[in-house]
Image 1 (spheres, one colour):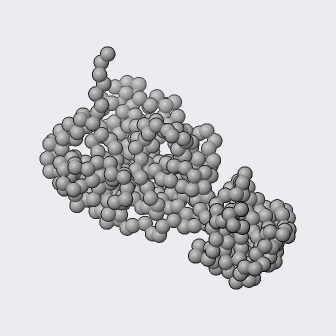
Image 2 (cartoon, helix red, strand yellow):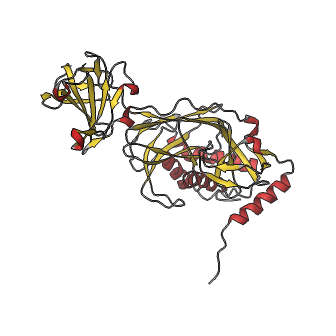
Image 3 (cartoon, helix red, strand yellow):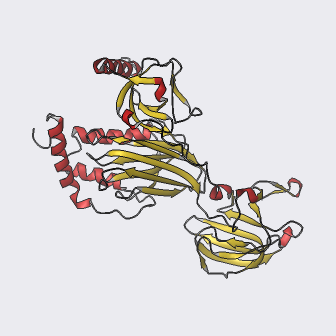
Length: 420
């Protein structure tokens, strides 16, 4: 066993040797990374970590190959997430693993990913957000890295710049792990712009017909008593404070971080001046009905513009309520089971509404990885992951028979390559 060839060593010895080599390889990069949320700059903490392993000659070791394989699988076969979602499980330190989630987001929504890794506070964990570009091949997705976390931080936030499919990957560094809990939340990226008001106070939505269909409504109307404070929805700089025939007394704020302009119209009074910087919650003026709203009850017309009008609702609306509490026993995590119910189905996400991946699977061997709500996350023999109800499976007592069945099922799902 020379030149870092650890594959022939017994597993405990291999783990200890690779741990020592890994620590030596990355010692120069174990400090805190730059930021909790970052735009894509071409190299993420995950990529830098792998690069250090490669420079140290560890890339071809079995454990590193397993680690990169798990990272790739998390993006090519992610589970379906419908936030709010909490998932618990266990990262086995000696068996590289990664979690992958797929979700849809509208422009203006904010994704927040939080991780709690019990008992290993110093472990680095790589949390990344990717955007799926175009009609990508599921086995070779075209991804744009849009956000990542400091490898010592356990939270990442990202404001969706476009409506698209997004992927989230969570992976601990080599030989680190333990019980985990991952939370995914999607909500508004802006503060609600009328004090004390809520979504139920919106009386007219984006795209509603105006003037008998001659034009469309390019914002949302939030109704509130005259004089109610109008609040800055985001961080920015006041660009214009004016009075126009249609908007009446208006304020324009340029939100540089979001790459858009915010339009506050029909104000009764204006409290800011052009050039002034404002933060979320600062008072810009008060609700009124100036301009062409003179015949309507007082309300704020709130619009967003970025190369044209954009629907403000995703920027303001919360998604769902609370995540379902975990009802899968932690003692099931990383156990081998087989399906016993004739009615069982494996689904892409932890709900009955999620796509069915497999049905008619009585006897199928599965590996339970974790759980979300009332569903267990499982790995199928072909490597895919999904969710099943724990009541549809039972522990496999004969491990030899389980492995034989898993091997047979994996071989059955492998496509046959015909010769010339």
